[in-house]
Length: 386
Ligand SMILES: [Zn+2]
Ligand SMILES: [Zn+2]
Image (cartoon, rainbow, N blue to C red):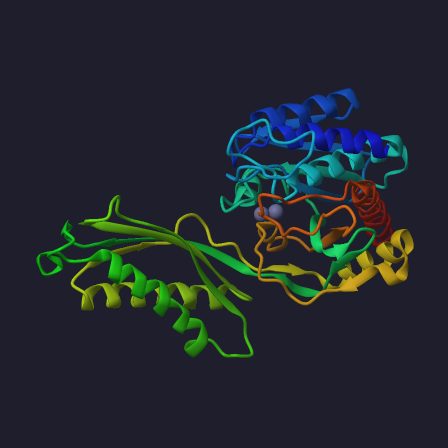
């Protein structure tokens, strides 16, 4: 099946679409499921799809893939590169989708052996738009109720053939910010007749780091990253406003809320000192931390050892990346793992969200096998418990 999975991944890679706009992607998923003879429901939350496999009455487990891409111009030199200017599957969600379709095909072949139901959740808008939350609101964890959920992410830090994860908090609570610093524009030669938002915004960028260095317990983790700074058009005009945006991370939702409160106070205070006005917004929904149920990480580790070899399962430290998979694990026990794709020879060493991000596709059938086995084993365990 490897060639089939890789072929799907390449087709998906060529048509990257942003959150809630994954129309071609969603169509390819639905067509593939239909070809496999697997019933599906959709669209859910704009472009989401949920497929169901069932061997009869019994427990229900879910496997999840995210399907969206990023607003990045692809620089990777691959023959199946993005056909959509300014869009790229730089987070590997094309791989996640293809691996889950692979699991769909594998599980379909064994549908009669299933001790219950497997839901395959193809979810839109993971990148900052909390598609998982909308899928939850649409009821994908109900009817029948999902008792366990598994997800995975291609993981450039880990070599191909290996997997990584941990019990408890694996990925960070995540929020985003938009800041507008308003001053009074004017001639750059007469700054005293203006209120300069550029200087003020620059101070804000620098001072925000003080929250991390002076206010967060050094033994706890926190991140504030300002990722865009826009203001002004030319050399001799002080602009009227500057717009900043960025993200903040913590290992807990409480920690995240603390960062947001202090960011607001810093921004408003620094702006006031410099006679500017500032608006701070935290758009969308904060992602909670992704917390792996210890017993399910144990199960994932056991399955990983059997399929990949005991030496190929890595205990990972927590990572400050965020995942909206957290919305599912808030409601049901779950486990999220990193699937190694690092291959120095191939050059698949770039980080997620990099314009040259590259995947070692040899990992894809392994992801499919892990997905399928997570589901099969979980159904067997849950059915025995009854
Ligand atoms: Zn991403
Ligand atoms: Zn991702």
